[in-house]
Image (cartoon, rainbow, N blue to C red; front, side, top):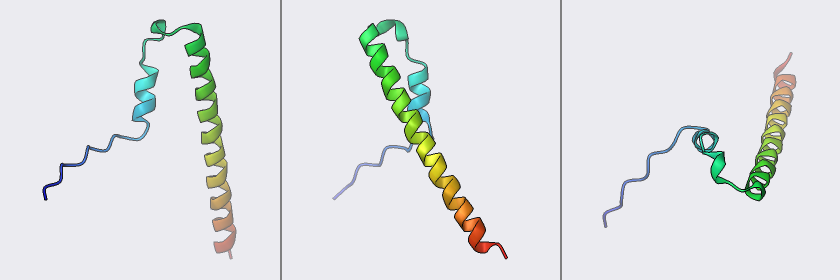
Length: 66
């Protein structure tokens, strides 16, 4: 059985990079408001991940500190 080659993996942030280049003139006000809400939710999700990583690093630093 032959498998198709996997799609090449995009670089980190590629989807965001593409979204930042979209022509916003094509969107309605409602679409733009939805977009802003989604972006704010993504910012919150990203900030939560940053805090988790900082907490993990602090815990590891404290564990290995003599």
